[in-house]
Image 1 (cartoon, one colour):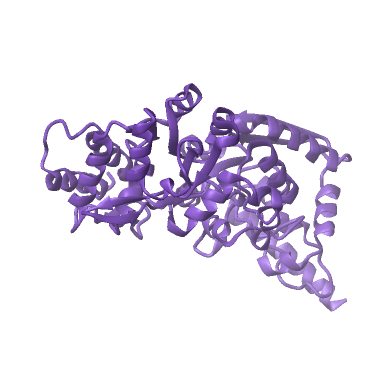
Image 2: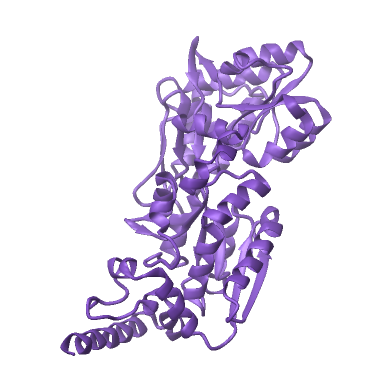
Length: 444
């Protein structure tokens, strides 16, 4: 009896503290911590992560259902490409809880722009939303993400690959649910034009494509891709501890050699600077037979090249006569929950559902997106997928995308200048110095 009385007092104290600290009674009352059942053995405050993890998941879900008397209204954002699949998954979610009345509204928001839309009005964001992992630091700093301090149906941290969990974590706390592990890039190619050996060297690929009267495409006027050359040659770009400014050594020793290599590669006229959508058109038309791109272009390449569709890691490129392996950014797509949701518990349960093993398998089958879920990633279907296999091979040369906002515009300008042959004849060291000044500039 004493234990139960103590547990009850602790629970009352905890709720009072949450209401005082949060200033939002609706949020406090719907947090999954409230679904943790108090027993003789559970005297710790319910919001404690360790205590929540020891609670039987079915009890947590049952308690949430029992505490729900009104219609559960949720707003969900998914990318335009993910609308059909998400619609199907939302219907399955509702079917899984037939005793609850849901009003779930699905909106369209790209993972790449989610942060900007959310930060414009944090409290007005969707209850559940997808976003690219490089946005997580700013979202957490703005108080836009509910910490995953408890789970309902599966252990999020242990079910997904370590890199995706790390990407969803800030200062040791998990703030999002891994959805995919494929937000990187590699080389697609038409195997009727290139042999596997050809694709090991970018210079060799250019030679082969030139002989065939075809092009190789890469969006070098984009910091995400031009990074592969400088990082591959050992020149660094890192985010500082302040989370907003950068350190960059692209203008250091060897930097001008890398810039000259990029000039030489694009001066052939075979390697062309081309944005993603233009690449899709050129592949379909047959003018481009290889490209640096990501899994979202797999269907485009497969439709165009049929049985000759192939993919591999990025090739090497020559820097001052020595081959250097092209690097890349690795990335993940995550699902977050707004702490301002009026139904935080249900929002977290839905986020779990949209990223569980079955949903990640469905996403791979429907869209060919690489899963973060360990069990799905180990399936034969995933392992036999050319794009996902190429991404896995490139992973050894990839780094997480963690850069401040001042990186993108200077890097874009540098790419445009080098891809167009440095038309003003600017000294390369001066060009790189100017670029690095912009990349490392203080944030105003």
